Structure formats: C-alpha cells, structure tokens
Length: 213
Ligand SMILES: Cc1cc2nc3c(=O)[nH]c(=O)nc-3n(C[C@H](O)[C@H](O)[C@H](O)COP(=O)(O)O)c2cc1C
Image (cartoon, rainbow, N blue to C red; front, side, top):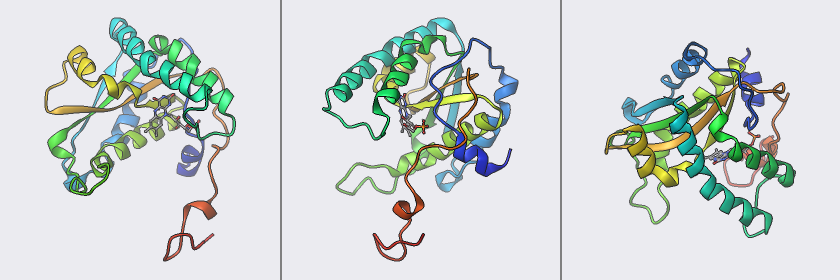
C-alpha cells in the first residue's frame, strides 16, 4: 500500500468482527512502531498485547466510566465534540465502549518515564513534549495496522485508570501508560478519505496566519 493511502484512510475503527487477529498479522505494525523518532533515541516505548478475556473485561469496565461521563457532557453541550457529524460519532463511540471487551486485541502503549526527555516542564503550561517520544510510535503502529487491513482505535480515556491498569498488567513503577489501542477486523471497508480541515488552515508561511496553500 502506498504511504499516502494509508495516511489518508487510517480511520478510527469502532466496530469489529469476531475474527481473531494473530501476532503475525500485527508484526509489521509493531516493527514500524520501533522505527519512530524518539528523543535522544532512548527508545522508551513498549507495547502490551492484551488478549486475556478477564483483562479485557476489566479494561472495558474501567473505560466505560469516563466514557459515559464524557458522552453525557457531549450530549448536553457542556463539552464540544470537534466533528460535524457529532451524533454519529458519539453513537459509534458509545457502541465501541459498550463492546470494548469483545474487541479481539487491546494494545497498551507504555513508556519508560526516564526515557521521554521532556524539554517543556519549566514552562507555565501543560507539558506535552514527553509525548513526542511516544505517540509517533503509536501512529506508526496505527499505519501498520492500516497497511495490514486491520482496524484500530487509538484511545486515551483509560489513562485515567493508570494505577489500576498497571497493577492489572504487572507494569513496573517507572513505566507509564500513554494509550490503549483497540485492534480487530472491520465489518466494513476502510473509507477512501478522512474528514480533516484543509491545508490552507493548517500550514502558515513565515508568520502565524499567512497562507501557503
Ligand atoms: C490523543 C487521542 C485520544 C483519543 N481518545 C479516544 C478515546 O478515548 N475514545 C475514542 O473512541 N476515540 C479516541 N480517539 C479517537 C479520535 O476521536 C479520532 O482520532 C478523531 O475523532 C478522528 O476520527 P477519525 O479517525 O474517524 O477520522 C482519540 C484520538 C487521539 C488522537
């Protein structure tokens, strides 16, 4: 598959069939993940492939707690959802939450905290740079799934349950959880193009707001 096609069509999959996903089918996606850039090439990212049904049940149960709160707030307008088709997105995401324990594989993206090298912790704002050593690997994994024809959904709501998730999966103290990726086969084809704002709104030349495209 051409890179551009993978990038343009790697949609968040929220419906899955019962068909199993093998370790072999995920090998290239994990292989792409390890080639992602990581600050100082410290390579802090690790993945746990969760297949155990009891563990998936527990993760799904925890996931639904913040999700149902989010859903209520989104439906009441208390928080905005950045999508024109808000109702459909929320309906799909609610189905996803209700069936998360049935998704064949949940991949937990973890990282050794001492390997993420954040350079913005002294600024008077939320620190985000540390994630830069983690999420490129996650995105490479998602693109690898797309290339393999496997659906995936990147989620972060379960990060709120980090201490419980760490205990459940025996994750060491110095390791953090950054994302939980549901992985499985899709009942429908992938879309041909994702819904995103245009280049004219994304890229500026020399100064903020000056268009390039
Ligand atoms: C940091 C991050 C966290 C996300 N967390 C969740 C989540 O907890 N649950 C979920 O259903 N989708 C989650 N998503 C998926 C987004 O909703 C999705 O990427 C976005 O709506 C674009 O949708 P599309 O992939 O269908 O184009 C997350 C995405 C990102 C980048």
